[in-house]
Image: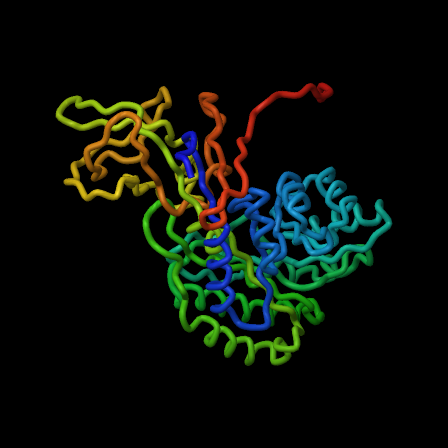
Length: 403
């Protein structure tokens, strides 16, 4: 395969299938895996995971469109998010989506209102913000003041507000307590909190759960070398907890589901970039690349992904002596720097470098519009076979003035 135009994201579908197999083997069975499109909504990536048996979890009209274009059945899509515009609910219900996640009593009322307008009945999972926060290595999502989920006290105060609408039928509970947890112990800590909370909320609402969404939080390397943790022992430990909490879960009462993005696609992707310039200034070697913070790592500054300290690897196989370098991108700002002290071999303009493990939270989690550089090419391969090559474009379209 000839060297591609750079910058270029490369996604390997064979690696995605391998990652799905690893995650599936280390989860309790029977259970279902939802693919969180926020990690990477590329249609070939989504279609591959749908083909493995994943359902789609979306949180925007664009993600819903990507899922449907990739072949998802709208009836199998879970539409989540802490707030949803009425027009977005209209679009989703008109497209056939019938399962949503709701984060408050008001959100349930809005779902019921839009469903009644369309003359349909929808099912919803109530996302819960547990009272007991647990310290974890990853990024906490609930267990504190948060836009995600309804507090247990709010549910206890007015339980009928969550079950009163015939058009929005309570289907179960949704948890996602933390993200990017690196070990089984951290995951089990969060899952135990979720299971205890689920029992309390089930009693408060006087309902039986059809679906129990335990979220995920499975960790994966981000822009550095490494592999997704296998989480050996997780299936056995969590199965035992489920046996004691919901004795009929093996008969799918409730159906247990998990969500994952990075653990499914992180290791499938790499970013290829070329050296544009090499110079020395104030005693430091400066390596300037044709990719930078606008194409990788934008959300790292918001703590949505780990702090960005990417491994920039030479693609040539010959071993060479390494020397420290400041690694910069092409943007006209001093902030465009991946590293101030990165070991690199001798490189020259035109050399091809690669950043590993960026299949999740890469291009679509970036600042790609800043300074209006061209979007990277996205190249999809399946092992050694090229599947597709595409490039996002930016454009403006005329709309009616909002007044």
